[in-house]
Length: 190
Length: 75
Image 1 (spheres, one colour):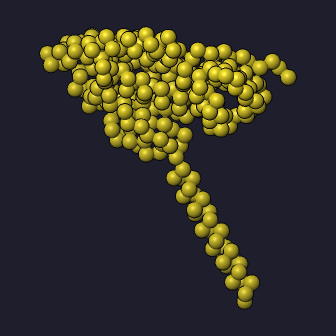
Image 2: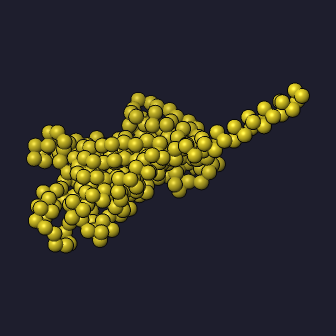
Image 3: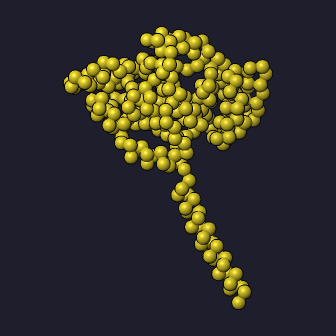
């Protein structure tokens, strides 16, 4: 009978549609933006924080994974990792050589022992461009999530207590962050 | 209708005007309006993108010289 045939086809189509719908819902990215900050230079961190604050302003949940040199962007302010406990001399040397706070990061080009950075900062101030401290405060106010790379902090010798003092930050591994990145709308590597 | 919340973002460069808008939105209720003045040249396209992405309504936008005035209604 043609009608039964039609009904059967319709039922098949409905079943297929609901299967595709479920699959689509599962695959649709969440409103997440992930930024991997590998670099520890003032200008690159500026780019990372500009992206982070803009994405937060647009209403996305933002996760910044600070790895290797990028971990230095979390130093300074209320928390200064690497001060409170004894550690072997290589880590102490690294601590001595790493920037003490976010504003101490060097420029990736034309730093000239910090003179270039100072000049750039005064130019930016005149033009009304936010500095790193302001962007960091805005990002925190808008609810950014920081993750610091587990391997990097073990290498640098930061303790859990020190990481605990960094606001809105936890330590995590690459797989944990990748799981977030895989369901994000956009991922940036800086 | 209640007076719009006013933000003066003149002298601020990208992304600060949009951050100010996002902060004002957090305290706003549906139907509230925010009037924001900025002289950042990216602001006109940024505020349009902001309204598009956050699903709020751009009621009015006018640019005169370098100054852009936008009125946003929170949905």
